[in-house]
Amino acid sequence: MQKLILLYFVLVNLASFVLYTFDKYKSRVGSRRTSEKKLFLFSLLGGFVGSTLSMIFFRHKIKKTSFLLKHIAIVFVWLVLLYVYFFELNAFNFLK
Image 1 (tube, rainbow, N blue to C red):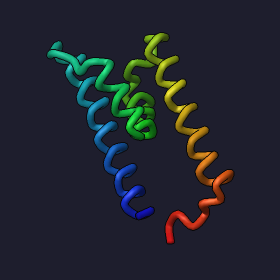
Image 2 (spheres, rainbow, N blue to C red):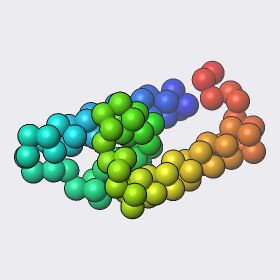
Image 3 (cartoon, rainbow, N blue to C red):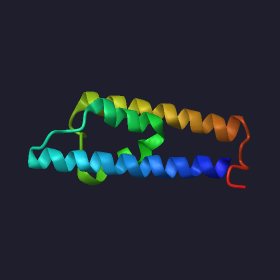
Image 4 (cartoon, rainbow, N blue to C red):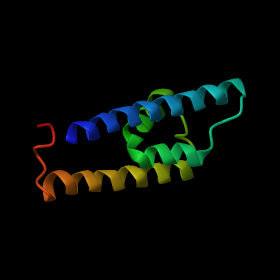
């Protein structure tokens, strides 16, 4: 079961990275953009690492303070959840 969860997180982060990168590309060519709701949804579903990496690599949405604050809040929530899972629930056998 844990391997499926790990695979899920890898895939959702990859999808999130691609989605954010594609949105940056669309902003440069003047095409119709991806909604912020959809971007946040992918981060909430666990793609916060992929979205953060895309934001850093491509300087995407980092000047928009309201977006950045919401993204930071999502990352913080996920970090707390991961902390609780690994340290409070003693789930160090995740990769077994």
